[in-house]
Image 1 (cartoon, rainbow, N blue to C red):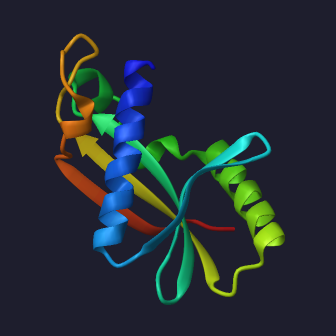
Image 2: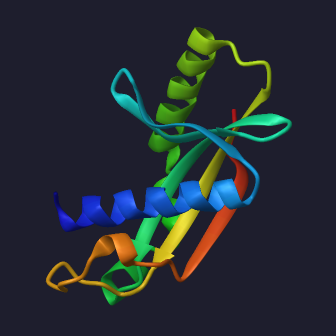
Length: 134
């Protein structure tokens, strides 16, 4: 698995743990709908939440790209809306849907750094509620 995929997968694990600590129940992870993927599907007392996770290691190169949420551009938003619409059509949940973005900021780790990524802790996690909507 590539370095980028490893960091991304660790970010999703940390985001799911964060949501659990905030009182959300995790319903599913990495749900494929057609060519699209929903990173985390969770729920709280009021919403079914579709969380898109964006993870960045805090290196000089990654800082040039700005906040992780900026990677959820118009095309990505359209993909998310399509996948969520299809999920809702298939599953018909009772709760209101919401699409959130979770930014996971990781320490500066480089591909060459020998480290057990499963022990890597985030510098910060930011939860942007209702970040994508029609």
